[in-house]
Length: 348
Image (cartoon, rainbow, N blue to C red; front, side, top):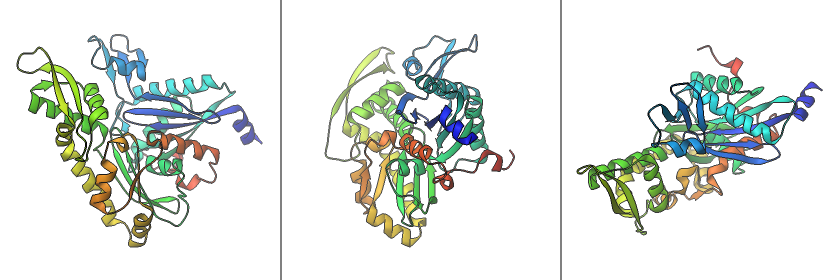
């Protein structure tokens, strides 16, 4: 009876806690927030100036006393207090859309292979931010549920979640992750590769935001396409503003090392996967989710190298958030896919 009252008078919120972007799902409303995981802090007063989109606009443009920080590095919490503030902001924003009497129940997606200490940090940050009940699920599992893979069936499926800070590679069967690997090669690393390439080849300094924009505009892994884009930055020789034309071939060269390492990581997971499950993956193919799934030509190149069909999920950016929403619809059914509850974790 009390449980039903809680369900009736409190919100259910799903959060995809990403290094680059955080998405929030509100039961009955769908995905209501999709904002950068950035917080702007006033270092003189210790006050939060802005969160999300407004804070990202400040990256590289703030006076010395205002610092725009990303509280999550490689998918895990690097600044507990700032993460707590960000979660509090997101939960309060969701609560304003649908006001309820009790505090919300929250499901949070985290990278696979997260440690107990890191899990506890996520749990504590969410509780301190206002959640009544916190459940944690690994992102590739949430993504698989979000793209309607029958994760509880005795059939092997492979999901690769290419996010901002990490790429999670997971083979799933019977409601559990059979084989997984979390690699710190993802969108942020590719941005760094582009910045390094621009510095070395063009003797020009560009910011992370510019690198990301040019990656989205003309970045491709396959040989066929060759697009061009204007890139503005600072000349390292003269120190003055400069503009150059960059091609897809330049970006392909810049990203080739990281893409090669990423493919090696995927091969490593496949090599360790039991043969029966591997045969299921060969039949069903590999599904790409996350922002990195949108890199032009990556699915085709991966399919050619692995000789396994590779597909990009519909709306790959929201797969994890949609998965947390589906879990919230039936927490009892999906109980076994969640990480152990906070009180079951060993002490720090």
